[in-house]
Amino acid sequence: MRFGTVIFDCDSTLCALEGIDELAGERKAAVAELTDRAMRGEIPLEDAYGSRLALIRPKRADVESLAARYIAELIPDAAATILALRSEGIDVRILTAGLLPAIRLLAEHLGIAAGNVAAVDIQFNSAGEYDRFDDRSPLARSGGKATVVRQWLPRLPRPIMMVGDGVTDLEVKPLVDLFVAFAGVVERDAVVRNANRVIRARSLAPVLAIAVGDEPPRDPKNLELLQRGRDMLAADPLNSSTP
Image (cartoon, rainbow, N blue to C red; front, side, top):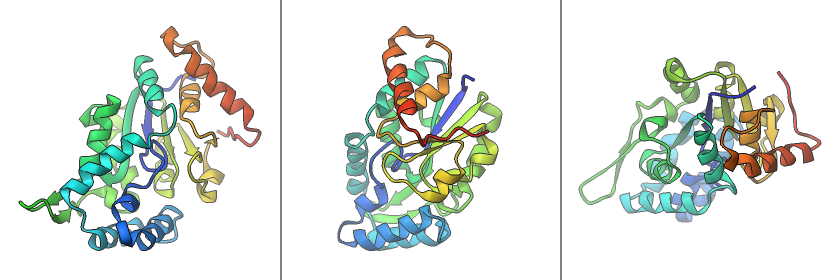
């Protein structure tokens, strides 16, 4: 089966970091605990989201610096995989509860159009200091990623794959045709246990292999990356493949 759309989470999926933790500075331990508890499903995302930003109060310059960190910490083969997916005619999107100014710059680096990105916007005052975040965004709440995917569905080519590492990504599973747990950065038991497929390699090349299936690539330039992804999937005896 060849997929028409691939939707990626960002933090700990496209990039080997949690952006909000990077912004936290000396408050990193407290913020990281809130993040991890939300990603494990122990507390609702809405309970963690505003609390984290209130603790950090990131400046505009901090968020712009975060974009550079995202780019520097891209998962191996992430950029090549996204380029290959797009050259194969597959719609690629980013869906994240991360901060929109940083995610937008990352997406631009990866060649993903702004309209294919959903994240939480943040406002600053005239001095570039934190003012507030968009608390109306569904992505700042539990179930928000499913809300955004429902809005996107009329425009998304089927079949649709979602790739992510957290329970907020898993909430999208009923709306898509395949949910892939990316465990190359952090493996969360509840997510892996309920995924259709699991990628444990620290690479996103397996996403291309799953997206193309058994078909040869339409663009021969993608053959090497595709084969590498297939080899990684075959090398993992625990890789799941369920309906």
